[in-house]
Length: 235
Image (tube, rainbow, N blue to C red):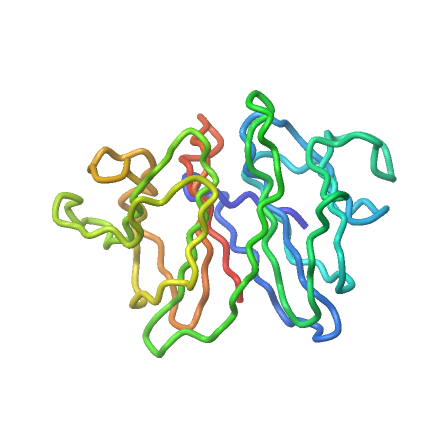
């Protein structure tokens, strides 16, 4: 199942959660964060797992056997087995997944720069402290680096705000997740050390719930598709 989850499109906002995890299996989900690669199919081993995945779409979690995972991300086609040549192919560097754990796999980079790759982020499902949610940020926007990330109330004046994450470079992942009090939040991403806003989730605010774990992914903004921020729920 695929979900359009750009925060910039409120009507399309959905949160794909991990659900129950089979302790004998691993969980994976795929996020399309490459702005110029077009629609893709995703193969795991010799099987097609997802088809016609477009920019900013995310899959639900799928269970896979633990071990060395061969993931191929290829232009969408009628093929049922992976083509010989795919822009992203982990054959020479398999993704190691272990039973009882879950992983977020983000297709990042651009065709233009020849930088396409699978960025792997192991998910940490440790329960948040009471009254908090936990947030992980992934920088998958090749056009913006480094950046500061702000998580504030919807009406907070940015000039008085303190960044939740500072000087965050491309392909960086916050480890560990950040504990933040439950509430309604606005996300803004700026050039590092400045208040020059590159990405803004808007003043409506998004209610982030007690006990939940979220992943926010910064991507290149694209007109009528995304304002540059994807939000996922991990648990």
